[in-house]
Image (cartoon, helix red, strand yellow):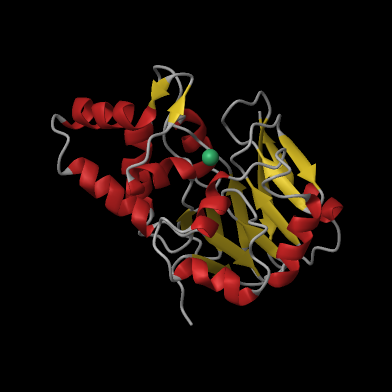
Length: 253
Ligand SMILES: [Mn+2]
């Protein structure tokens, strides 16, 4: 069954995986320039949170305008992050005391002259964002998670039936690896077994460069990191250990 919230990638081609951009246009452009939109077997995935910079230099609008254009390409994928989700469900989101929803709305008015129809169109775009990517060689990509509540494939598939307020989707957008009430290494393994994948790659957390948490890899591609790290994956290669995945890590210099 076709599911536009779960992208399945084949056992051939190339895949670049980039985590949270948070309004950093310079980094966004550097990653996009690594990719070739004309090669349909060459995919790029952003793991959510394209928007919301902390501080003054917030290029969320410029990034979104470009991403909306590029989303016409079937090999360009931007997953839903908790920051995009907050606009969809109209939930508050603060960082360093800044109200990021208001800040984004002000930014839209400032850049476009009026808040509407641009704001509505951005939220429409957020609603087109897939939640997950699964590759034939055994990777599962999401913004965050997993949810320890997912103990069967049926429980997992319920995410796609419920709307944006579902508790399991919430876990895949907000959970943090260093909070044992969210999930443990064995929750990662249980989840990977349920969805028949080997390794999970997420963003969302503040780590320096990248971090391994059991069979989970946490990437920091832009936000809060000195060494900006992404994956450049050969989809035709089998993955037999986390080392095989680590070998495909690259760094923006
Ligand atoms: Mn996040």
